[in-house]
Image (cartoon, rainbow, N blue to C red; front, side, top):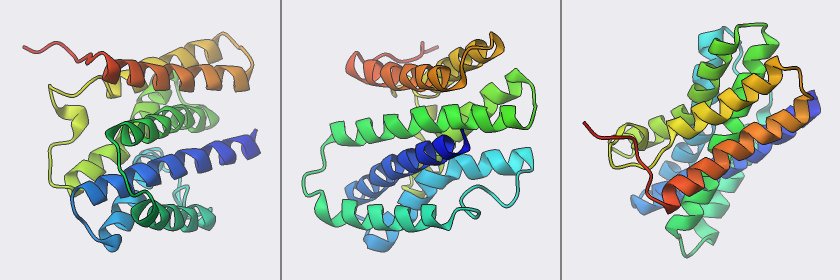
Length: 200
């Protein structure tokens, strides 16, 4: 299971690095800016989670190849992906959101904390990289804007589905995949159909 979690972490980090680097290029940053945004996007949520849970050193410090992977993917994305489509950004970001949300819940449950805390840590892990990315890009984070399609809500619902299935003692791998697919599908559907939270 630990090996699978590590593989999923790499997938999420790669997707978030692509998303971060392309977002930086949209804002006309240089390669240093792109690498920084990719790093923050990939590691921000997990770092906040680990600090809140007292898991130190934080996850990427214990796995230096994650940092190397992030830098390499950021450079390749910045220079090689010539036509940056909004669809690619959304797709990569949705993958990162989905996997990181479930990983956050899994790591929290490993510490034998309550399901409620696991859901919250799943959401924190999923969204905070994007929050920090948007702040560094000098804009209000997408997750806090009325006009943005469902984002944190997707993380919350998918993580809740995972936690409910975990409490019911279903097999760990299938329910992790179900939770991640729920987040991913909800995010893409929300973007496709412009689904937002109700405005006041």
